[in-house]
Every structure is written in structure tokens, then in C-alpha cells.
Length: 95
Image 1 (cartoon, helix red, strand yellow):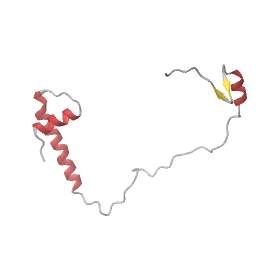
Image 2: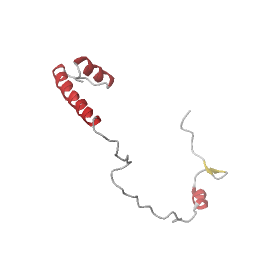
Image 3: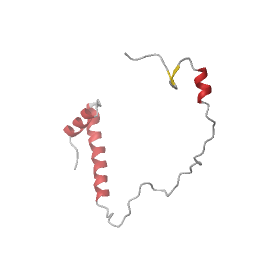
């Protein structure tokens, strides 16, 4: 399915790209080659292929979920400029 000049211009318009007139033919050829390759891949038999989410069977190492710091909420609220009902008060910045 070779792309034509109008197809390339439409794609460029949708992508908000400005193309030089001299390059349109080159883009048409290269994009047509890419689409032809995708058609070749589409023809491959994948009936017996197991889908996978990732090509490597890697497992992410996780650290233990345990508390590593003490609760210092009271200390930080004591030195805060403005606190009310356990919440930090900040100046209004949006009308």
C-alpha cells in the first residue's frame, strides 16, 4: 500500500509538521517501506506464540515494607508558621 503525496501532506497536517516540498517524495517512500514491513510482520503465524508483558522474566526487588523513621509530626507542627486542627495553613495563591 504505497502512500501518495496527499497522504503524506495529510499526515503532516495532523502532526502539525511543516515539510519541504522536495522531501515529500522521500517521506512517502520511507513511510511506504515501513508499512510494507508491518504487512510482512502481520503475515507471520503467531497462533502458537504465548503473549508476554515483558521479554525478560525479571522480578523487581522490593525492600521490606517497614517503618524506618519515627513519627515527628508534633515536632514539625510546632515549628510551622501556621497550623490549625493538625493541618498546615498556607497563603492563598489562586483566586
